[in-house]
Length: 332
Image 1 (tube, rainbow, N blue to C red):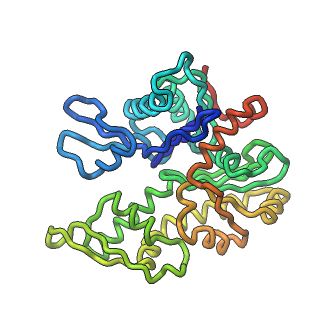
Image 2 (cartoon, rainbow, N blue to C red):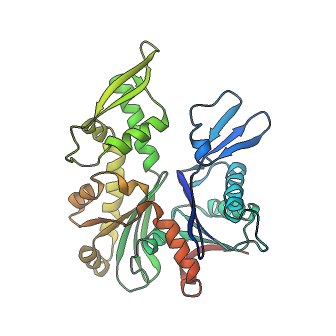
């Protein structure tokens, strides 16, 4: 079983079946009984809409486990759903994690997976998994550059011969873009909105570079700060782009820093092959154009950016013997 344990979404791949589960990484908890009442999509619909005794929690923050017990319950629920309770032996699990996490954070992921019913647990750095899932030739002696933009972290890595030559992990990604939109609307329009609304704005009219969608206007509903009453405001695409400019510049700077440190031979390979964008953030309109413009290197979007990491874990599972060098941690 391959798992992409993401801040925003968790995906599960089972050998021979492909991707069998794709759910938001959210758990709704009854605070009185201390039990989960919903996991995944059902729980996400409850974000910001729960009564006092129920809270909707995201157990991962910045790509790592922030609440161990809830993360373990979420994993257990997903593993049981996939196997429907029918498994004689604990499954071998390969989990994609951010490359910048500490040993303590790695240990927490392995422990949570074992407590949730896993057997042998193997960890693989997300940039390598994403590159394998995107079809890059990571086992060859050529330089490949991948940018994996998730919900909590952005991973920039240069890979060659199944290993990471250079990598940088910044804890700025989809969540920070949502936060930037929320702050902008509060400051400019005196409008308070929730996380889900900010994400909808980002998906519908957000862009990283001027596009032919720039005259798009979206009606946004929220609470007006001054009157305290519900209010609807029209926002334009260029406004949203401006609101996200700071977190986007952090991502671009991380890419530039990694390129500056890349050995010359690998740098020439990257100029030839281009940069590959993966993760949910790759779906942001104009992001490939922005990175191409800032670095001068052609930037491609992976065929299925949301699923790259989990597809990579699946390919590693299916070619397990040839892939032993890609693991960054294991537990038995």
